Image (cartoon, rainbow, N blue to C red; front, top):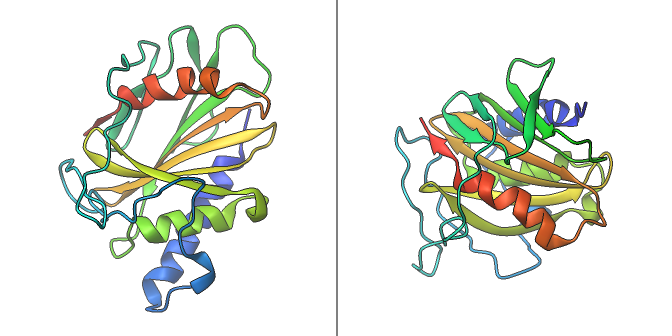
Length: 209
């Protein structure tokens, strides 16, 4: 069982608390991605209902991969979010009350997903959460910020980082004062097309509550 996301969640909560008390940004933590990232407004950070956000140049962020059918596997639910794991996956026990976890029914080394939701700072925003996520990874030099996404109308940051057994794709947002993360663990040598076949249907199944 992967336990690192809980440690990350604790570190994020602490980092967000510190950022809420400070008016100064860390210049070394300015967003950078492997592609053309949007600077993005912080829509969905404290709202009661999903709302699409726009990038700094006024163009709307793309909804999570149009045309992808939502996942049809077991339902994972935490505060303010419900989603489905991929078909052929199963829920597995998780010792932490703020997490729900799933993995393939047929064992695949290093492959699983964890949904987490904890109370977030009412004064933090998605930029704070993204910076805190990068700072909490095991190797910041190999951590990459990806372009932000819109998932069921809510802006979500995407961070790729070294994982326990390979790679972590971490999707994070603040929604109705909940700090929500969806973490996908996959082997580093997994082909991106196969990784996308796991991640994209799950994102397409997300429903905010």
